[in-house]
Image 1 (cartoon, rainbow, N blue to C red):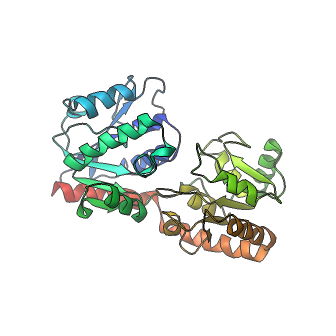
Image 2 (cartoon, helix red, strand yellow):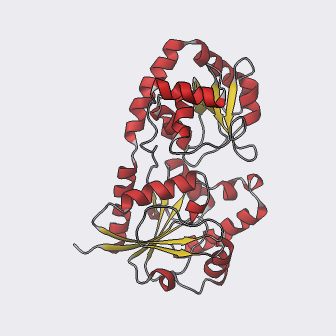
Image 3 (spheres, helix red, strand yellow):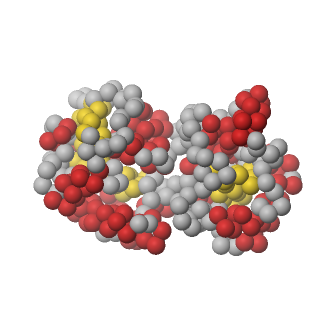
Length: 341
């Protein structure tokens, strides 16, 4: 069987966050598959490419320039940069013309569904790009059924053009050695027991209710109480050190921290809306993220009941087995294969 020549935009590796994690983790697995011939497009003015992928075509130009070239002018094909392709897999920022079959991933629809949470420039780019996706894309990958349902509500993309492929926790997220946990606690002067929450810009991570719910406990907010930690080495230690992850977000396209915490053996409280029940299954305590009393009650229950935490840890370690980046790569390859038949 002939190899499928795939071009993949990895420019999001220049930025921290969930899209970076998806791009890096998925392409690492895709690069191992003998059925694919991968070539990568990377553009950033300030951040050189530091990864280990082969066949990376690097351009020291700002993404804003490519946004104009690919989205607004839309008259320069990706083949000018990558050569002939069977598939082009675009990022969530630009949608260049291509003679190849076109695939794109939607991680969430925050700028389209909740424009008040994003900068007007980001909202504008995503709205304009959606028109190109609706007109030209051959297949959309949504990272959850929730994101797929959102796309069906806010776009003209037909259901048969949207495939759900789940994300996963990286292999570095696993229970950590007690000695390493002690050293980590000492380094960052962390209390013996604490609730961990994840910071973010704006109101989406629901931090005001988080703070109110934890008034009787030590609270550590990643990105606020602590700086953003190294994703490969220190973030798994932070999860493993926490007594509990409190993640009552108001919206998530997927919700990777749920799986990352569970893989480290940390109990989770998360929201009963958006993608979070889909990712957590029956392994976490679910709360209405707008109900302060309910969040506070569940935090108290989990912090005071060691048996409950033990049960949640077991359920979480079982839940994470449903997800893997190898599986995501295989399912993504199947999307490519269907389009090139």
